[in-house]
Length: 418
Image 1 (cartoon, rainbow, N blue to C red):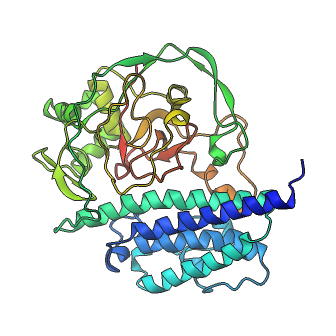
Image 2 (cartoon, rainbow, N blue to C red):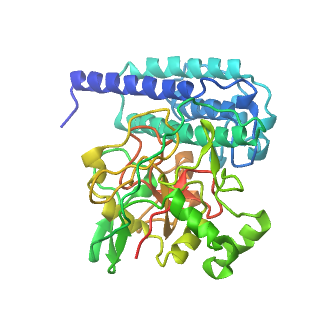
Image 3 (cartoon, helix red, strand yellow):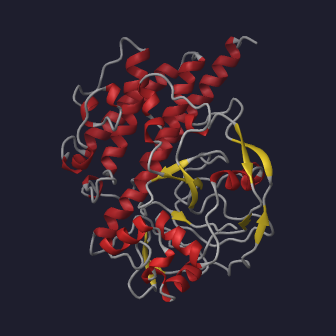
């Protein structure tokens, strides 16, 4: 049915408000940070805060404003080079490892850039949008939400590298109530379907919906806790090569891993975005690599779930409870929601045993946008759920996050399976 003018206006107004809300959320995250905080890059994979703020604006400018408005005035000709991330078909880019060298533009100019883009976006949104343009704006919003989470995990590394261990938030995580007993819930067997279907927004890698065959299996009702993971360490888990995949063992030895990222050597405290805090034994263990998660599962006599097993276990849970709203409580906490599957969303991304690869029938979109997900479908592992740093409304049952198996800087944890 054709969209009426009134309906198109209502949709544009709703989208305009959402654009404003998401863009303002990025600015709220930097409250309390100094210009120096936002300049630092402590690792190649960890971009400076200032770069995140500029890159998310570049995305709207490059893929929407310059394409849809012939009168749009580009804020700065060199920003197309400085703030392109990995879109090769969009042009050349500044090396990722050198983003921390960009002392200019300063944060004030980056914020002026954001305002320039916001003003042009709101002007564009004042008119009815084609379905294709609306989809691009939606992609830009979800892209910015991804960077909001990355901004938090990246600034956590920056603050942790400072001997003063400063805090971003004063909301220190509280001590959780004891975790419920670990229990395993049987999942469906036989031919099942996973992947996105419908008209709601998803990233291209979430589809197409397709059939999978599942053998008998069961998933744990909750995530592995800090206390349980500490027992793995004290039992010599980091010193037993029989528990580790070969690549993981080699990396553990080379890097000297003996505990999760941000834990102290006494296994008593961990660095959080609220500064160094006592380790809560009942909260989910986090900042673990795939290799550590896999080794723990082997030690516990279990395994990691496949992404299909996880998705089917989570089906219906998100719609019942919904994702957590935006908060400044950026650390996993233990929670008991009664019987059934718990902590699927809003605590830690959960490693699966599934390699990040295309679903049957997948093809990336045409043009530079096709580089968003498809070209990364190699050598990475899928994580499911969402974390304490994931923006409200961003989580989905079909969402496929992906990182290299060595990555431990994300809020990533463990759910066991049999």
